[in-house]
Image 1: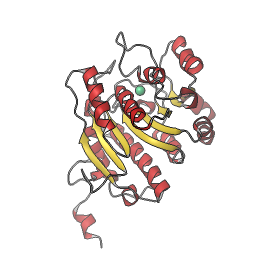
Image 2 (image 1 turned 135 degrees about the horizontal axis):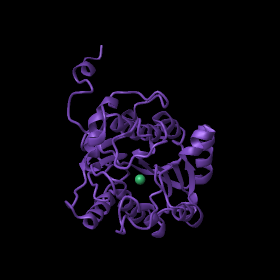
Image 3 (image 1 turned 180 degrees about the vertical axis):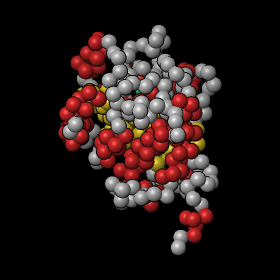
Length: 308
Ligand SMILES: [Mn+2]
C-alpha cells in the first residue's frame, strides 16, 4: 500500500502547478511560470488570475499517469514551478519589457501560464534573442490575433501575431491557426491568410469535416521539422466547455478535440508553450481552468515521451 499517496492526496499541499517543486539542483528541463497580466484585454478583464486558477486545479493531475502517453511527465523530466513573473502594475509597455527580460534568463524549456494573449509577444522576443530561430507558431484560438491595432492602441491581446510576424519572430508560412471563428473584418482575414501566409484551419472546417487525423496531417505538413512554439488561447474551446475567458465565441472546439490534436503533435520540435486567457471569475466549477491545466499537462507528457 502506498501510504505516502494516501496521506498527500491531490487536494492537499502547496498550490504550485502539478505540485511541482519551486527549485531544483542544476538546470531544470522545464520551468513553469505564471504571468499575471491582463492589461491587453479588449473585453472582460480577469486573466491576471489565470496562473492561480490553473495551478489550483492542476493539483488534480499531479499524481496521474497520462492515458495516451502512458507516463507521468514528472518521472521523465526535471520540472519546476518558478512562481510568477514580476509585472509593473497598470503599466503595459513596462510589463512587456519585464516579461521579456525575465523569460530571457530561464534556461531550457519555458511554459508560461497567462495572462492575456499579449504575453506571447515578449515571450517570443525572448526566445528569438536566446536562439536566433524564426519559429513556427502552432496557435489554438477563436481569434487570429493579427489585428493591426488593439482598439486604438498598438499592442494588446488582438495584435501579438501581427507584431511577431513584422518582427520576424515567427514564420507565418510555416505556422498554423486552429479553431478560428470570431467575427473578423474580411481585410484582416485576407491579410492573415494571403499577405502573412498563415494556414488557418477554422472551427467550422473542423466541425464540417470532422477528420482530426487530417487536421494533424495538415499541421505536420505546414510545420515540418521547423522549431515550433505552441500558444494555446483557451477561447479556442467552445464556451459551453470553457466559459471562464474574456472573449468567448460560440461554435468552438470541444476539449476532446483539442486534446486529441495535442496528443498527436508531440513529435513536433517544440521550443516552448503558453496557455492564455483563463479568467477564473467567469468560470464555473473550474471547468475552464481544468481544460487549460490539462492541455499544459498533455504538452508536458509529449515532451516527456520524446525523452523517455
Ligand atoms: Mn488569443
